[in-house]
Image 1 (cartoon, rainbow, N blue to C red):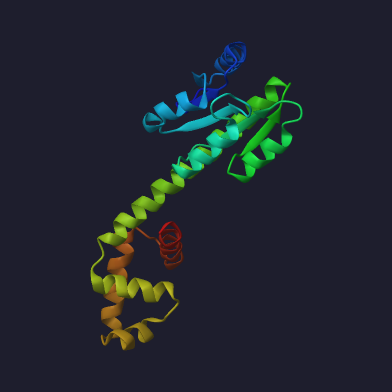
Image 2 (tube, helix red, strand yellow):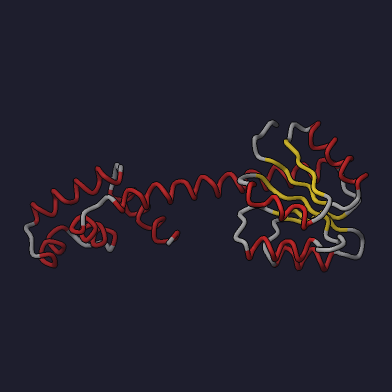
Length: 204
């Protein structure tokens, strides 16, 4: 499985980093190693896609504090926490702060690989949703004020005659505006138009 999305491994143990680098590279994943949470945060601004695999116990800043910091920075990177025996409560706390999974050491190779693939797929889906929401927002921004008024009423489930009455225009004129809205929004049906408007509302 080759991917352009990078798996960022954060662990203060050089042997663990080397072992994980070999495992993940052998599985066709692109890997970048970081020896501390602070070192990772230093390069965070240049990171766009991928996921994070971090140890929960590290000097300076542990995995739990890293997760909190990532949430504060609104970093959209799924985080998998590796935990040693007895550190499960910390890992659970990390998940409450937004981590997508935690894995207890020692773990099977496939357990980690499966968790990473799932995290990368989730991140790809989130990126696709963001791109779609942005495209919809751009289309809505190009609507005229009257077209937006018609759109809002269509989404509210109002019939053309009702929209015409509320806006003080003829039903025929509403049909023209409705057709323009459908064209500008690139919607093939009213149901698709409603879904687009709901996506826009959800991302606002």
